[in-house]
Every structure is written in structure tokens, then in C-alpha cells.
Length: 98
Image (cartoon, rainbow, N blue to C red):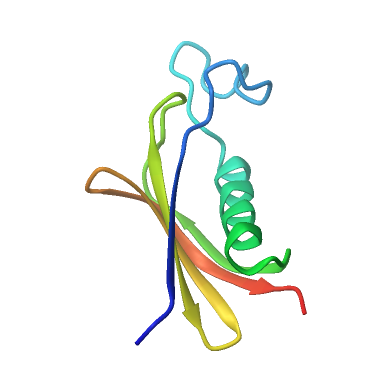
């Protein structure tokens, strides 16, 4: 049976990275989504991310909306997906620090 960790998060509309990201129609930048994946890994396994092996951003996430991150153990690496309701926002593969 595969190990899985899930966590909900939202990026506040007042986050300092948002001004300039599509003014008038703010979107959460991909780097903030990767930061959420790193935070979830740290909460789950107590380790940092050593590297992002792959990341694919498939849809936009609006600030203030709740999304769910799911982490799956994949050998020594960890797969992640981020969804808002049924929409897949991002997915990828992380290399945890030793």
C-alpha cells in the first residue's frame, strides 16, 4: 500500500508575490505552489526538498481559494499533485533531502 499525505492550503490575496502576476486577474505563481509542496513534505516527513525533478502547471489557482496537495511516496522520491475541487492545478516529482 502506497503512503499518502494530504493537506489543504490557500494563498492569501494579500500575499506580496501577487501584485504584478496578471494585474486585475491575480494568479498564484508556480513557485508558490512548489513552496506549498515543500511545506507539505516537511510536515509529512520532516525533510526539505533537495530538488524538483519535474513540475507541470496545468491550470491557474486564484488567491484565496482552497486547494489540496497530495503527496505519494515513489521509492526515494515523492510525487505531488495539487487540485482545486476536481481541477488538477499542478503535478510533479520531488527529491527529498537525505
